[in-house]
Image 1 (cartoon, one colour):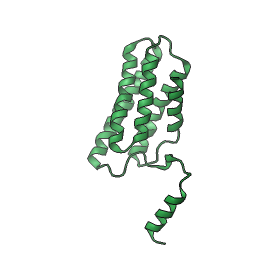
Image 2 (image 1 turned 90 degrees about the horizontal axis):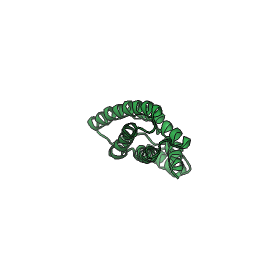
Image 3 (image 1 turned 60 degrees about the vertical axis):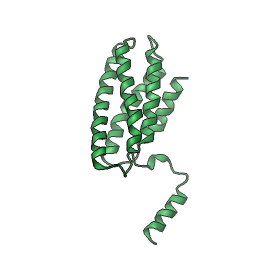
Image 4 (image 1 turned 120 degrees about the vertical axis):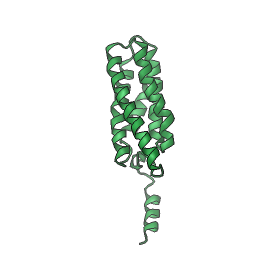
Length: 151
């Protein structure tokens, strides 16, 4: 069977498959843009991890919340450029949750756990994008937890 026909059949019968089989980053992104984004994502991961440690020590400190929010905000805006809409959705949900949590002196445990899960997921995204792997499987679950923690 020809390759294009085989691909067509796989596409037709893969309707029930999870979107997590999609690559974490679009294959059409040029090499230079890919490297720039990976460097930016590496920096975001480091900054957000540091901000999370600080935030855990003092939830009421707005500077720590702003650091978390800033990192997720950057993801929200830059991930679509490299064909990673699910990473952008994660960034949006985490940014909104961090903002809501920052308005409280003592955030809800659900908010804290959801933000922690989002931060823990970022290195998986970085590895997936660097190694041309699929979207990390738990991404949708973490996005759902972030959205639930705000309602």
